[in-house]
Image (cartoon, rainbow, N blue to C red; front, side, top):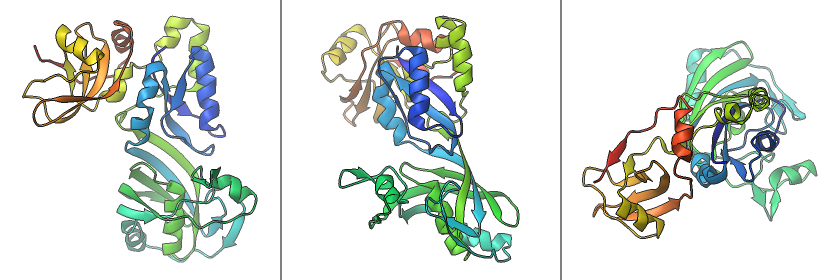
Length: 317
């Protein structure tokens, strides 16, 4: 069982609970998710099964986008609506210029202090475990990338934001920082992840969709799964000849066509099986970043059942 499921995680369910529910339906021995969502959050949670788990780290570190709703005037200990209220302040009159002036400070590469209620570890323990015991520790700020932060809608005490950010960014912390800059505090009341690179227009499925598909048989259930190669659709794909494929299988470098750009590429055997993610240097030599052990027809079979458009293969024969 090898592939990726683009799950629309429901509210009130942890990312691991969602993963385990899907894993049981697919009867997959190995599974992982590519970037946890808080129970409060909904939206895209890529689930990786079998050989696709080798891509989970890459997807975890990729760019992501969210729709976030912030409530002004109230701060909480968790920075979201599930926490205890710490402070209430009146919301001053805010025009579009004042909000934009606060947003612009949070764009680009910024220093962000992760919230205490987070899964980061300190002394071998999750920060949220310390926070639940009432402990406070100094959390060092980290550099994060906020590629886009735009106001989409507002009322007197709520802001709806479009957020596009890099790995490790806490949208809750953005809400906190925004509220402080506006002089009234804020917390996150809703969060929906809309895409994860390279899945910019994802065809998401729900747990209910998967359950109904499972009741109709394995073929229907498998139609909800994308091929492993779907997680590599944002990099060039190259088709190797038999000699090159054997070399890659033995862990040996190969020389590729001069027309290919340097950097990462996905290497496929002539039968369509995904072999490896390669890094191509300026001398056209390759280094294997990640190898895959997929049945010859597995990736093609998954590909034929999905609507995903994959980068066309380049032959190097």
